[in-house]
Length: 75
Image (cartoon, rainbow, N blue to C red; front, side):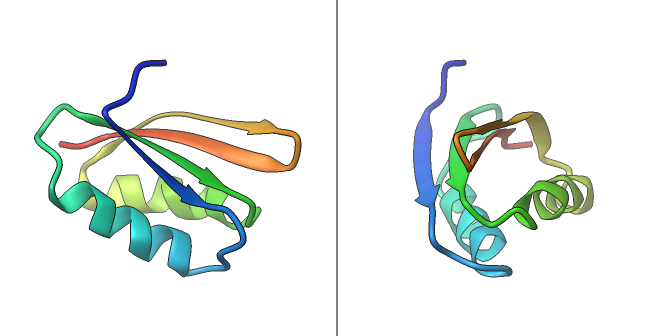
């Protein structure tokens, strides 16, 4: 999937992946896509809840070798 910005939250525990994702989205334009990589399994439900609460779109979430990959489109 194509993305405009990437953020690696590996090694960070809740709530830091969400806090840092929110900061990463601030300077992005509407419609741009952020790729986030996390190792905290709690990020799976947290990213979906964050998307639902903020109106951003979680385009996909996958798990690859113990890392969780998210693609989020800014509203």
